[in-house]
Image 1 (cartoon, rainbow, N blue to C red):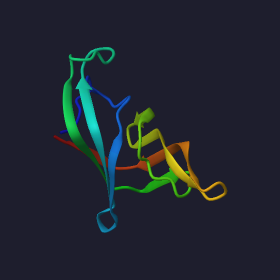
Image 2 (image 1 turned 45 degrees about the vertical axis):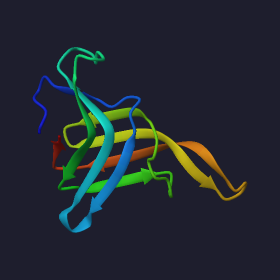
Image 3 (image 1 turned 90 degrees about the vertical axis):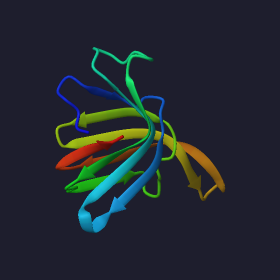
Image 4 (image 1 turned 30 degrees about the vertical axis):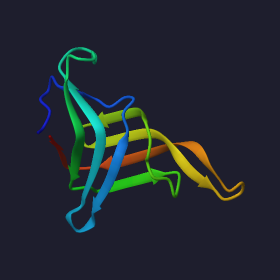
Amino acid sequence: MILSDNQKIYVGDRAITKLMFETLANKISIEFDCVSIFETESWIPGESIDIDNCVIDFFEVTNYFIKPLGFTPNDFIINIEISSHKINIKTLGELYNSQNHQLDIVEGELYIEFGRYAINE
């Protein structure tokens, strides 16, 4: 599925559950616990199409990064910015702190530049 011009997605207070790299295919897939698709001005609970365990595939990936180094996006999404061929997702998650030997809650970032995408229902 590709969004039409009047459709938007909502992933706030949702989580990334899986991140998959297919390096030979230049493809990155992100699985979210839920994605809501809506056509109104802003997201209204119960008035959207909710897709549980939704995977968004990004094809023709030309650049990506995950910050901080060693971080795996593994908790709630706090911000997402999408433009025509770029996506930037900020999340909260756990990162091992080798100085105090504990897990710290940190803000992480996942950035992808891509040619096209598809939403798998």
